[in-house]
Each structure stands twice: as structure tokens, then as C-alpha cells.
Image (tube, rainbow, N blue to C red; front, top):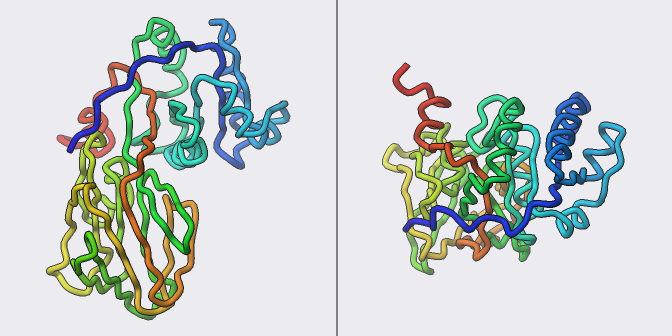
Length: 287
């Protein structure tokens, strides 16, 4: 199942919000350049308050920011972008990633490309791409994941047992270090490192990839999102890590329920961005 390739263009571009990578005061010059380039094109720039405090500028609360802008800019790497997407998901705002990190599968442009991108932005020469999100219920709390949700062992000296059901029918029992449940956007993250498949981000599917499985017959599997998936661990030796940013400890036999979210992450891209070129560049295919 494939998501729509793009949403319509923004109705207006008057105000944008900027979030900087945390604990990176060295990004002040980058922010000042971003602010200047947008203001030169009569676009107002609002800075999130934690980012502002970090670089001695004035800023506003994140929720207030989201209510007063047309799209968000994340400045940093993929981790910063994921955090911005997850925090802003209820506001239905497109997010543009400016890559100041290393690999950068998700962040779209480099800082030196921003001036040309703004010209394209004003001409409506861009795309807004929807990305699938995971909705999980853990400890009775609903959690959103953009990249992945990992069930991992807390104790390195013992093997983890994870019992899986699909649509309330027993599906598999995993033994090993853990299990990754990834979105297609997250297929190039931990999933790829653990030997899972790369799945195009416009696909609608869950990717289940065992981590250091005890049995060699346990292989990654791609599951349509029409199913609801449930996991249990028969002891209290497991934790759930969401997008590498939040951790939830599990109780014995606690249920983890996973389904596709009705909400989509909206990614703002250059029209010239080609996913397969990104893969070829980042993974050095053909070199």
C-alpha cells in the first residue's frame, strides 16, 4: 500500500518556526543566516524558546509557535528532525530539515542550499510528502513514533522473549536481544543496521526486524498496516524505546499494541529531491 506522493502547496508562507539542535550553541551563526535569508524575502521567522535561550535570542513556547506559523524548520540532523516532527504532529505542519549532522537520510537540504530553496519555495516549486506514523499504546499511554519502536532487554545477561500477535492471532515468539518495529521512513535507521530491509518511505507498512535473534530462522518481515500488532514479554526485563528518544519500562505481561496512526508526518522537500539518489549517495552504492 502506497501513500499519496504529495499534498497540495501551502496556502500562504508568511511565518515560519525554527528549532535548533539541543545543546548546540554553535548553531547561532547558522540561525542568523536562516533568519536573514527569510526576512529578505518578507517571511517572518519565529524561534522556539529553548533554541533561543541556547543562543541568547528571544523566542516563544513551542505550542504557541506552532499555532502561529505556516511550517517548521529543524536545524541539525535526523534526530533533531524526528523530535520536531513528533512534538508538532497534532498541528499538521510541514517540516523542513536543514542538515548540519552527518548522514542525514531525512533532513532535506544543506545550509548553503537554503537561498536557492527559498526562491523555489516562493514559486511553489516544492513538495509536501506524507509519512506514516506508528501509534502505540504502552502502559495505557498512546505514543507516536516516526522512525521506530524498539522492544529491548534491560538486562544484558539474559535473553528477551517477545510474544507477538497479529489481529489477535498468535504470530511468532522472538528470542534474542529485542525487536524493531519500524516505519518505512525508519527503515534506513536502526532497522538497516540490524539487517532489515530498506522500504520506500511512501509505502504503508510495518517492518518487524529481530535484533540478534537466538534462532537463524527468525527473519525480518514486512506487514501491511491493515493489521493491528500486539506484543507481550513474560517478565519485567524489557523496555520500549521510541525513536531513540524516549524509554518506557515494561511490567510483566504488559501489552504493547501497535497500529498505523491516522495522522501523517508532513515533510517539506525540494522538487529535485530523489529518494533513490539519496540512498545511492548516503550508502555509497556503486562506489
